Amino acid sequence: MPAVTIRNLSEATHRALKVRAAQHGRSTEAEMRDILEAAVRPANRLRLGSALAEMSRAIGLTNVDVEALEQACEHRPAEPLRFE
Image 1 (cartoon, rainbow, N blue to C red):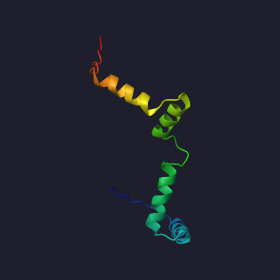
Image 2: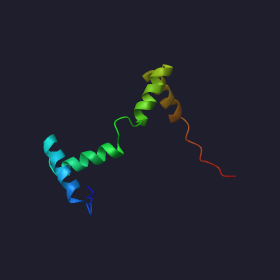
Image 3: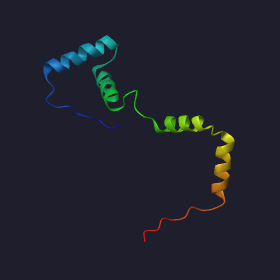
């Protein structure tokens, strides 16, 4: 797993992180991980799989339809792209 070093963090910020971590009952490192996760992966982000599943439900696509599409694709290989 990657490691990150944060340089030049002020003492006040470090103290505030330690207090916040204690309030949440976790280590300062775990608190920083949680803050970074929330910042770069917000709960309201678009999740492609969920969006596609919702679109499929909205148009009435069923497992039978998906199986039929899969079977149709098995019988013919994909054509390569041509750049002419």
